[in-house]
Length: 406
Image (tube, rainbow, N blue to C red; front, side, top):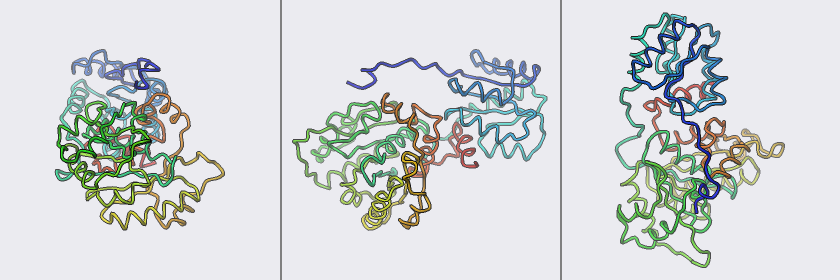
């Protein structure tokens, strides 16, 4: 039985369709009228500045659309950064203000804000901005060729490779609407199913044992689905069973998945990396997940060498995970890089609260703790290793740009 069915679920408040924070009464009434004319049901337009918005949204569900007033802000970008910290991805943001400056406008647009309207605002101007938000956007994709494969391997047990893999898959599928396959290649102790609160069954074993039967329908039936775009393939096999799969079976599985999905995220056990990586043809990224310790440094260096030898066409990425979990006993990133002679691509902080919430609810970090600093880094990891072009993903681009500018 799935974990959520055992512990039950507490209904989460639904996000409001539109929330506004406007400093003066005249503009507030205009924004209210424009939202109503646009057909937004029960727009919630409040008196207050962007600082008020930060305070209110810190303890409330993020609305689908948000309008904030920058009037009187000495540093609008700092205030927007604070706002980004309390908002989930997917939100669309409009701004109004009393400064008529083309440089400010360009800065806001470059940061991903949908529009900036100078006061005095009109119903027509606000209405036009809302209509522009509804204009169709292009799905975030890399190209029309082969699906990109991401193989994620932990340098040691317990460093969080499965956490990285399950969150990357969830983010790609849910925040960028990309049809994504998550494959857990640990047939005995795989935990991707637990991370997503899914029952894995025997799907992966059956697929690898029957390469001659492998087609789109067979693979789809072997997978379990989480939402519209995320599909998982794994198994929880009995320890008494032994397996010696023909490499051709794995190759056929990857080829079949590439025909059905845009991204394939593989949770690849360390013991299988040496033999399985050679089967992954470009475009492919290999992610080594490690911890900031001496053993992590040693094993990262050894595995990175193996990756370069067995999969020379892969894009290698190093993720330093659980940073801060062992305070006082960790290597600094600088020392880690010097010891491995490799550049760390991402440093993911340890968040004990988010980890406990994820373990107790069967939800990935990105779903249950979307405002965590850990999740912000996981989003950036996903964008890079899965080669997601974020320019067309308007709903989250403003938060990403602000994060990277700080």
